[in-house]
Image 1 (cartoon, helix red, strand yellow):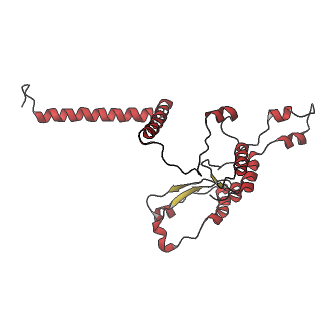
Image 2 (tube, rainbow, N blue to C red; image 1 turned 90 degrees about the horizontal axis):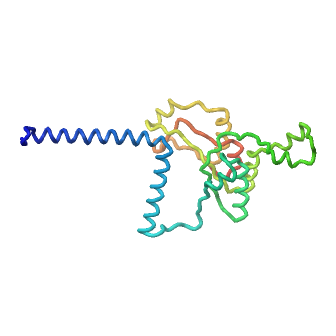
Image 3 (cartoon, rainbow, N blue to C red; image 1 turned 90 degrees about the vertical axis):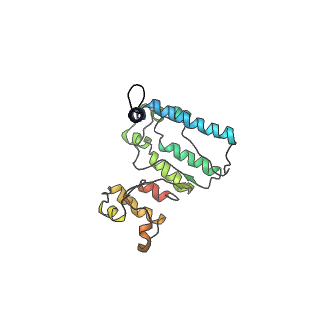
Length: 226
């Protein structure tokens, strides 16, 4: 007992309750802030700081000079807008091919076709004061075709795709397969050249999935790998 008549056990329990309450409130605040731009900006700043501090303390990490990243940074977004049209990716591939790049992996998902584009600048640059319907149609830009042609010509492109993994195992995956879209069904045969048959004797040793998202079939057919 202390001089106020309270046992040390009750004081300890009260203290633990306060710490628990603080922990819960802090967790709620963090979750709420995680949905805001403020939190995202703060996390990015802290992330950058940790890397800079690591370099200051231990020096620059060793990196293989043959590997590099190409970012869509703020300047690129200000120049070309968002989202990037796929003719930008096509132009990038042409430049990379000229400099002898052996492979490029896109961490951008090309799951849906992009909208055809009619540039006001292209229309304004025509000599005629008026254009026929057929002439206007010829001016419409197909950036998907631009990217497909550049991908096929370069033969250095590896595309990204995603899976929904069944954590509960193979039987759960088989019973809960998602219905595939016509575009996904069309893409499956194109993926076969990047696949090998699975030996049933070892199938339990692999991840099993319920769903798959596949890049557009024309991109898969043109790519070096997926």
